[in-house]
Image 1 (cartoon, rainbow, N blue to C red):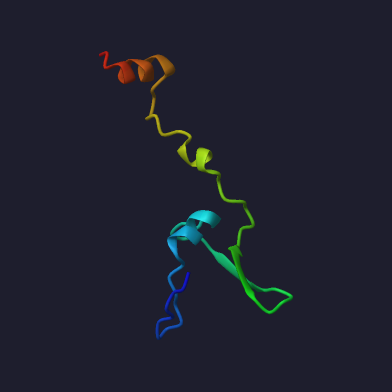
Image 2 (tube, helix red, strand yellow):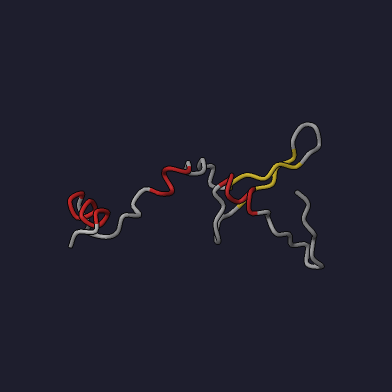
Length: 77
């Protein structure tokens, strides 16, 4: 994935890379030089990114218990 450097030296991190590393607006990143001379980007906080299931956790809505969620999925009121 290639990206363009602006006149200020800024680049946009491609979305697949942001998603892979769990980088969101406000996240800090670290650039490291590897032994082979390549540059590696990593999250500065060292935390592993959330897996795809963890990102979905808690999206049922505030204050809903299991019975209420099941009623909603069945179209009951």
